[in-house]
Length: 386
Ligand code: SF4
Image (cartoon, rainbow, N blue to C red; front, side):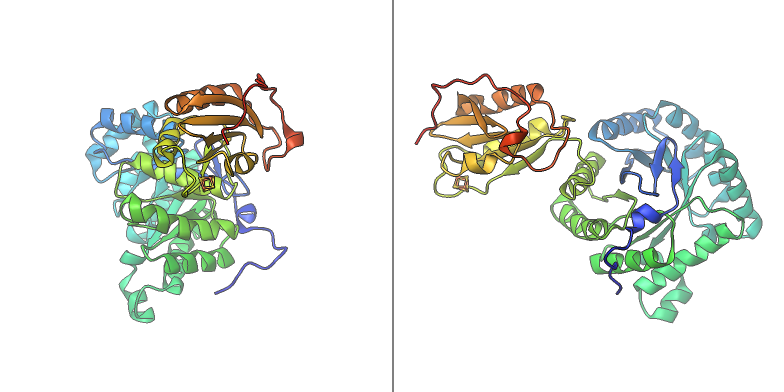
């Protein structure tokens, strides 16, 4: 297992840049978020509705399965009405890939080794090249070629990278290089190892994912560990969190992973204390409510939810807006300065109002007293409840 050497330029800054519609992937572009529709592709209205919800949650690119000609025939309407680029997910049938390209999708996800004769690969490559579409080669540890399983004994990182190499070569042999690679496994150490190896060999953008990660309860954690480890090493240009849940949950999880690594900063980040015996408000309910009501707000602010007025204010100082629970009430702080005292039942409403008023710090980063950029309506009579 090879670690990235110090001083080496991160892989994601060295990868080839491809365009998926108007979304740049690779070459140091912001790490993009992908998801996949659950709706039947022939139910265009439901698919569009789902894509709309995903876009509102912050998805950049959406993939849809194209299992047959009926689905391919629905793609033009889907593409026309989608607010984000649509990727066609194709298995085995090269004609469907060509139909998807003609329908206006922004990328094809297919493995050229699975579509048969070289003429078919050439026909797909020609269709993609003509329209400037990248192709994602997607290796899955659960469906490796038989000869690779025989050679390596079981799915290994080396076997996965060898599988990717085969598919990539088929495209390169046709002079095609707008390639994205994924190497997914439900086993986190395996996917991490495979992506690390791939980053040593390829300069194509890498699409990260822990496949079949499960329900949000476990899937969010395994995805954060697998995807987060690689992102922290500078590996990964785009990602999908795969959950057995409403795909909107995938987008929220992906955003949280990226924001926790400061790779994106566009929504409200909640920090909340764990609570202890000093609690004087219902902290868990409060934190959950704050999270639910700020989830769709696109403003890069940090909100600290602290359970008491003893340690809360100090801890909230690093945030843009802080709440410290008092005895049945809440104190609200803006960048360290207390601005309001409200009853517990009004804390969240008051917070939402403040979020509306406070502008993000253009410098971002850690807060300090000299970074106050908002003049609060100071009420000298307010004093923390001891
Ligand atoms: S902020 Fe107060 S309630 Fe929360 S953990 Fe710290 S001391 Fe306990």
